[in-house]
Amino acid sequence: MPRLSAATLAKVPAGVRLPDYDRSAVTAGIVHLGIGAFHRAHMAVYVDDLLKDNPDWAIVGASLRRPDTKEALEPQDGLYTIAIRDASGTRPRVIGSILKVLDANTQREELLALMASPQIRIVSLTVTEKGYCHDPATGELDQGHPDIAHDLANPTAPRSAPGMLVEALARRKAAGIAPFAVMSCDNLPSNGATVKRIVTRFAALRETALGAFVADVAFPGTMVDRIVPSTTDADRETVATLIGAQDAWPIMTEPFTQWVIEDHFPQGRPPFEKAGAQMVADVEPFERMKLRMLNGSHSTMAYLGYLAGYEYISDVMADADFVKLIHGLMTEEAMPTLDMPGVDLGAYRDELLARFRNPALKHRTWQIAMDGSQKLPQRLLGTIRERLKAGQPFERLGLGVAAWMRYVTGIDEKGENIDVRDPLAMRMMAIAAEAGDDAEALYVGLAGLTEVFGTDLADNQTFGETVATHLDDLFEMGVKETVAELVAR
Image (cartoon, rainbow, N blue to C red; front, side, top):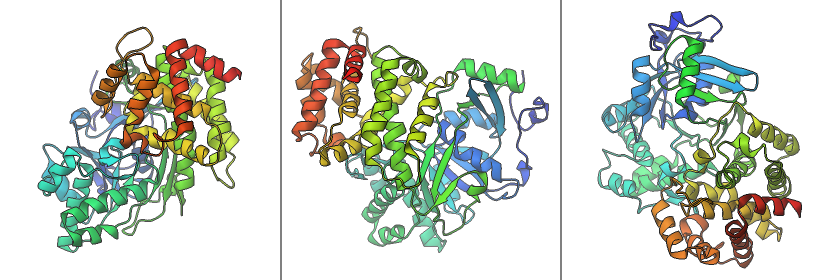
């Protein structure tokens, strides 16, 4: 079977949606840092919808860590398949909005030169929470981060996302070229403002005048939403059968997609609204809604579900006790902290529950559980802080935190090893090894990670009692009995 490419595109079976524009006539207006699966399921699809009438807004992607995306897409001329899955089947579409992918490790100068060129008016990012080299508890630049230390010492050869952005902006400043807009598409609280704070601080550490220049750059906030599981070899086989060609890295996703964007692009932007995006003055309420309801639920299901032996989120949602738990988490604990006039939060909750149940979407609990130390502050702890301030209980959210603590011990309920993927994994496992089976000691050790919990939560008696009690239950009774007991109250 041939490989998907520009040369084989004409042989794709009728019925598969293909790019409706001449790819040889489009040019790049966007550089995207962190060109992983989520970007290719989300922003790249919106841009693909717009290129027929807006051919100067195509994307050049960049991998900051690994060249795997470049290696997959380069022989395919940047083409790839997005496969939308639900109970009715799998519907493939070939996307052409990514012109090429650069490997920042071997093509750094080419990438920086492109970012510094006038044709690039937006630099967008999906580098995950840890890619911003910040303290998740405070939202500030982590000046002690090894990549930040490297980039401050070697500013023209950066390897971090903040370093890349600042070096490209410094080159534009020197050349008298207006700055691009920086658009984060990651799950950070107030992502536009947070990334602006991180990047401006890095620039100021390089040079005061550069910091002042970056402080005037546009950092529009966004809220992005689409569930994107990891691609498996079985997925590749399915897609190959559907399109009649081999695709090294197709993207599997759900029908639902949402993108809310702060409309602040001084150098112009594609008409994203024509592709279904919501252009708004203030993204934060939407972002908070998603982080607390979808992402908070997802993390809670991931840790509890994995420990309970459930491989996929849809498996978790087949357990009635877990459904009650997540319904209650959203309804009783998350929704009261949200101020969303004109938005039916109950309908949003029900839509999320239906999406979680999608049996065709094989979203692994282990995948969602990655990098929890970076995700917990915005997904669960922010909501808990508001509940504490209001003197309100947070039993379900507290159980989510306790499940994370139980998970990062690296040993599951059967005594088997858990492959914990997290920047703090070694520190957390050392804490767990010292605590042994003592839930209270484990709680004290992990709560002492100030980059996760700050100092306020570690010192809060109500927080400690709630989480430590749940953690003790998880050790003594196991996940399923703990969940069943909580939802029966």
